[in-house]
Structures are given as C-alpha cells and as structure tokens.
Image (cartoon, rainbow, N blue to C red; front, side):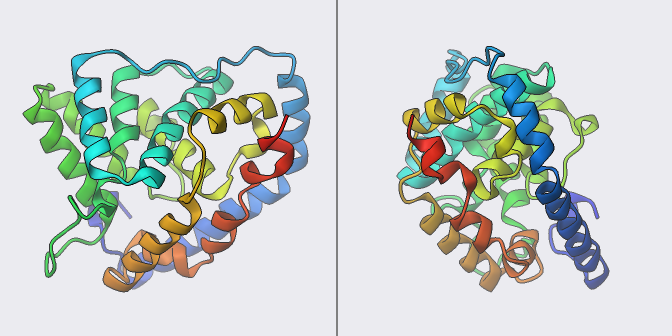
Length: 252
C-alpha cells in the first residue's frame, strides 16, 4: 500500500491489520529492553523543550494551527514537535528543524472543521487530504515547492503503521512522535524527566477524548481509511491508557 491510495482495498486492509498487530506485539515485548535503555539514558543529557525555529514561515504556520485547532489538537501537535526532537536526539537523526516543525504543526489539519473534506468529496484518508492542504498553505506563504512537497509527504505518511528513515527524517520523526502521543509507542525509551518537561509545556488535557471523537467520526465517514481500520483494531485502548499519562511520569 502506498499512502497516496488513501482508501484501502480489502487486501490492503488485511495487510495493514497484520502489520499493525505485529508492530504492537513487538512494542509490548520490547518494553523490558526499552526500560534498560531508559536507565542508561537517565545519565544522558537529552534537551527537552527545545525552542522551535523562529522563521517567518514557522510563525505563520503556528498561526494557521492556532486558527484551525481547538486546544486539545493544538497541544498534540506542539507535543509532537518536542517528542520528534527527543527521538532525533535519542537515535542520532539529523533533520530540517523548520520542515519538521511545520509538519508537526499541520499534520492533523484534515481532522479540523476548517480543513476537513467537504461532504461527498472522494477522499480516502484525512492524512492524505491534510497533507495537500498543508502544501497549499505553505506555498501560499512563500515556501519552496520542494519543501512543501516534503511536508505533504510526511503528513500523508504519518498514519502508516511504520515510516522508515528512508522515507525522510522528518516523516520518520513525525510518525514516531504522533504514535507516542496517541498510543504510547516507544514511551519507555524516554527518560521520565524529559516526558514531564514536555507534558508541563503542553498538557494532554482533553486530548484522548477529543481524538477519540474524531477517530469515531473518521471511521464512520471513511470506513476504508487507515484511521478507520486503526480504530476498529483497538486504538481506543492505547489512546485512553497511554503510559505517558501514568502518575510516575506526570509527577516528579
């Protein structure tokens, strides 16, 4: 399956489900090793709460995000920028800060009332649609077409089960960040002080309930999409029992 298909056919849905279950199983079985790695990282200085790029384009896209999202989704997108940066430090990945920041900010535009597909539009996936919207916004603000294309690609890919580094550092990091914030994937790899710092800057107040509502709407309106399939496969459970919400992480 390529992300541009948007709507999955039956064979693609089966492949997606198998892949998602395998990744989740790998995540569960890897928790012990991740905790050992975390113990090692407690002695490693990860910079949490890094400042975003201060370019005109970054500021403009932050304004676009503030206009489009309610507080729960805006907080999610801002946390994704910080999670993505932490994963880059953790894994030694170099990236374009401006590209990663705007991709994180805009990655859920396709879920918003301001930018979601109109009734009757043949759109298979909110992420594909949102990537296209983000591309138009970026070009309108003067971004180079190649830069806008890469943001479009990163956003469209983020609902895949996995996004390899070969797809681009920014796409890989956005995917890792979004799946941490929604489902807790790789949470055990981050030191608790770094997690607390991010959650202190952008609390998760109202996010699980709001994101769950939006996924239910996506599942009803686009039943063959990746979002719908993920919801039917049990996204609700990790969303409402995300390990980053545990008191041991949210309290010093």
